[in-house]
Length: 542
Image 1: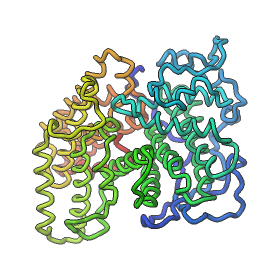
Image 2 (image 1 turned 120 degrees about the vertical axis):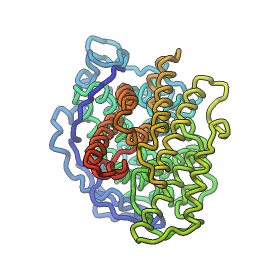
Image 3 (image 1 turned 45 degrees about the horizontal axis):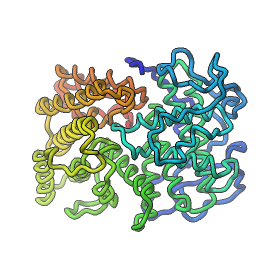
Image 4 (image 1 turned 90 degrees about the horizontal axis):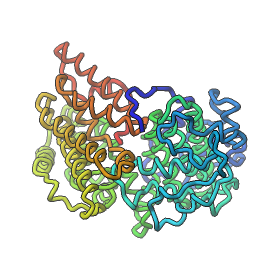
């Protein structure tokens, strides 16, 4: 893919999707409130109220379409437009993207390719090559998701890729075995997931060439319909009745924001997923797929917490068990290949967040710090300073795969360095001038990972695995003025992945640098966390 040094920054043509959201305890089963149906896309539910187990999450009234959508866009959505209108143009960065789709000048029948599907044991995903949805546009977008988006969303290529093996496989299962035009809760849950994948593919296709505005419009429209279908799905039965499919649909809304760079509502979706998990927190025997989704949701919740600098709502306790997902974070076996992080550093970041929230509460209440709190802070620092990659018990990464292990080693060490910076700044109050070596080290590890991928014999693979940005963002924000070159190089380099969220983060990093420099020029010390809050821009660091 061609690098985009300055990707277009545009405003989303629709509202963020959710407006007023109330806070509920994890025992509250009313976590999504159905909205009025949308002109036949969502089945009429009359005046039916939420059933027990439905919720107050989606509270917006989506009774009208965004005004920015044109008649042509509506035709494309419903399949009345021609494939020519929605096919890649000649400037498509990936030349084979539209092959087999009846693109301009191609008289071949619209059949999906299958050679890029790497999951030989996943029969449903392999049927993408032989089963059509009935819409050329849908087939094109699903092929793009399968061939490009699914691989892009993992930092390491892996046979257990959840974005293909679970997200796409489940969506295709719904397409093949259920009538998505029916209005039952199960069908609407499948439909919500399917539409969210279409939105993800459309947004990524737009990011590949921001001149193709039709894909942005399609992405916004499919996202809109996904939310509508999700609302309808929970209007009829308890949310846990279709647990796995609903969880997939909710988490897919987070993915849409990562690809588009336009949605600021990721915390609402992540919180909804957390509340849905809480409804089954006592379940011991669950499927591999549900466990994997719970692990992904818990980690996304942790990443969201790392940029939420709020004081703890509860008093300090050294035996605090207020985060029921700590066990999920600790026991996961997928974080190595899904996020490039080790178990020890995952729990260290989680503990840093917990200690910071209590520290903020102590300061807010002007209370002295208890000794057991000070002890916990010191022990966390000891753990981070004594960490060694070789001592980690890595699961999910094949020792025999030298390339993957080398890239993972770079990522894991970058996560550790950034976790140290995060701890030093939030807990110990270090200034940026004290962290030059740590910031530079993270930069070297992140650049080395990109170099390894570029030099890989499987060049297509190297270009598809986008890095997780948390280590880079944390380190970048703490780079002193005269040592930011390595980070300018890294951020501009990774824009080639065409992820809107990366462009958004790079833009925010530069804004934070500007605020820090301005404060420094005035003799004012400003922390990176304070600068982050000043701009009021929320980003999910993936």
